Length: 129
Image (cartoon, rainbow, N blue to C red):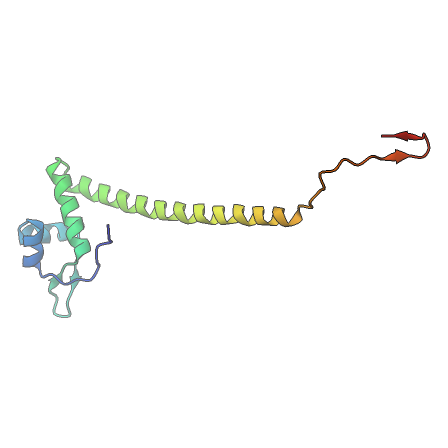
């Protein structure tokens, strides 16, 4: 699945139609802090694919009976979780690279030992050990 684009291209009427919502609903979501569309220099709203994905998520949550404050909190927690997962993945990659580097270092320090058995002679006791 590809990442949705952040390039704002849709006017409010098109975004409303694509999301299956009324344009006033989109304005209410923006006023409530659930959505932050881009603005043109003239002040018109422009929506991106990312905004449309967010609208669908808001729609799903509100249809599940969650109020707008709850939706706002859920979206915030989902964003925090995404950041935490990315940080964890980065730390995991760094740890994996560190372990691999350590293993490469150990391999350099290893000295091959012949598989033959060595007999040591002790001249003081005339004994072999």
